[in-house]
Each structure stands twice: as C-alpha cells, then as structure tokens.
Image (cartoon, rainbow, N blue to C red; front, side, top):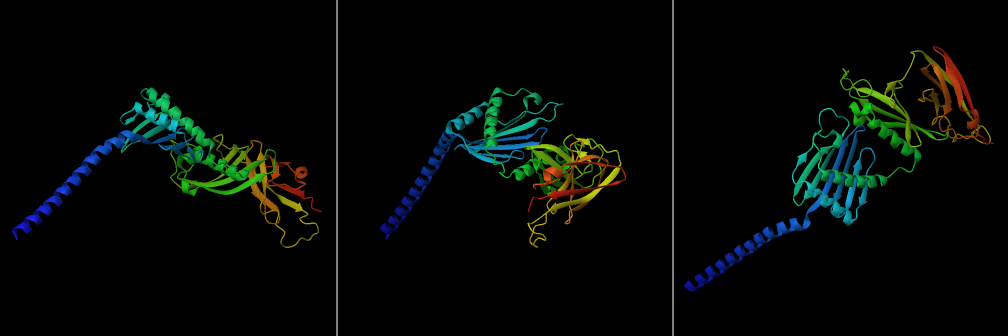
Length: 372
C-alpha cells in the first residue's frame, strides 16, 4: 500500500514539474521573441494628414510596409496605389529624425495655412508629429521634417493622377460644380453637409460646351460668403446655387440670383424688375404629323438660358407646351436654349433681348428640327 502511494505522489510531482517547465519555456520565448520582432519589423505604417488652407483641403495618405497606399481627399477624390519596396524603405527611414511626440504651432498673425500630422506605427508604439506651413510656424521646422514632407507630397501627386475621373462629361461637370460649392466661402462658413443636393444639370450645346449645374443647400445662418465677425440672424437659410462649368472650369457661380460666389460680391441690380415670357416651338417632330402618342415631348428637358452682360446665366423652365415666363432684373441678355441640337438651332439662336423696367418682353423662338 505504501509503495502505491509513493508512486502516485511521484507521478503528480513529475506532472507538476513538466507544467512548470513548459510555462517557463513559454515565458522565456515571449520575452525573447518580442524585442526580436520589434527589431526586425520596425516601422510598419505611416499616416499623413493635411487640413486647412484657403480652399479647406482635407487629404489623408496611409502607407503600409508592403507598399500598399490609400489616398483620400475631399477635393481631389480617392485612390489606391502600390509603391516600390525601395521607396517605402527610404520613406520609413526618413522618420528617424524625431523620436517623441511633438507639435509645431503657428505664430500669431498668419491665416489660411495648412496643418499637418504624421503618425508613425513602430511595432506596438505610435509616435506623432504635428506642424504648420514653415512660413506660419512659431519655431523653425527641423530639416528632416521638410524632407519627409516633400517625399510624401510627391506620392500624393502620383495618387491624384490615379483618381478616377467620370467619363461622362456632364457627370464630370457636376463633380466640379459640387466641389466648388463645398469649398466656396458661403458653404464652407456654415453650410449643412447633409442638405447638399444636386437637383439639375443642363448641357448647352455651344462651343465650348457649357454645363449649368443647380445645387441646393442650407446654411445655419443668414447671409453670404465668409461672415466671420458679423452679427448674423441665427436661422436656417436655404440657398440655390447655379454653377456654370466650361472646359472643366467654373466660369460662373451664383447664389439665389443675388450673390456672385465666384467673385464674392453682390450681384449688381438697380432694383428695377421686368419680366420675360414667350413660346418655344420645336418641329416637325416626325416625318408625318400629327405624330404618334409615343413621341417624346421636346420641352420638358430644355430651359431658356438668359446670359447677362456680367456672364451670369439665369435659367427659365419651359412648360409642357413650350411656353415660359419669369421675373428678371432689367437689362440686356443673350437668349439661348439648353440642349438645342436640332438643325435649326444655330440659325434661330442665340438672340439678344432687352428687358425694360416694369414691362413684359415677349419672345417667340422657332426651331426647325430638320425632320422631313
């Protein structure tokens, strides 16, 4: 009986010894492997962010050790790219100039500068540095910071070229118009992002082609432009923007037919109003009239376009029968029709019309489609 008990105790002791030995080996392995992995892995990820400036630019560039990079921008769009291993190695090594978190703030006075942050993932640690443009900084920036910034910005330039641009010209014009409004002073000051909506896009078949994009949004306060320092009415204010894009550039932008968002000035009006009315006739619509009931109506998708001497364009919708009417400031305008591609468009348009104060100007426009 005694021998049996001793054997049982011996087996338990051996089992306990094996467990202790295994635990010791595991702990020693972890303690050894952790610093080794840190030494071998080094920097695994960089995140560079640029915000601010006059245009309200937001950019983020994330680069991983395998060379994959992701670029996100509120102004230029998003893109993915792959960097070569040498470029990644050189870029990661350039982060050695700083060893602890640091922020370089702006001195008093400067405005419209960019603010930058760089986060460096090194093993389980993250070190961060923040700074402003050198000309606005309160203290001199280290040379290593300038070098890595140039390197990162060169990668951003490559990323921008990879941003997907809409292939449809009108869709691209809508994107340009929307980007302009978002960055323009009125929306930037207190525009409500979730209210921004593109409600219409019209193509004027001119040379070069004009795209007129209608965008609506709400502001948290009354007024236009940058209203910093002004006493403002705290009331939700709705705006309608008309943005004209030609050759991928915004050439005209108005808010509520009152404010020139491109020039940041009030639209000059002498307070005298007139009106314009008339009828657009487009035909024939089929070789033998009357046409079948399935013939598309030619008026629903087109609008009268009145271009003032200032270059600002006003749109007037056509009714289902081609008639139109609108109040407008007195003055001389060039009259055209959106999306006018018929044979007779070039001979019938454009027209000059003068709107007189307190009077209605009637205008007939006859378009020959060339269908016979």
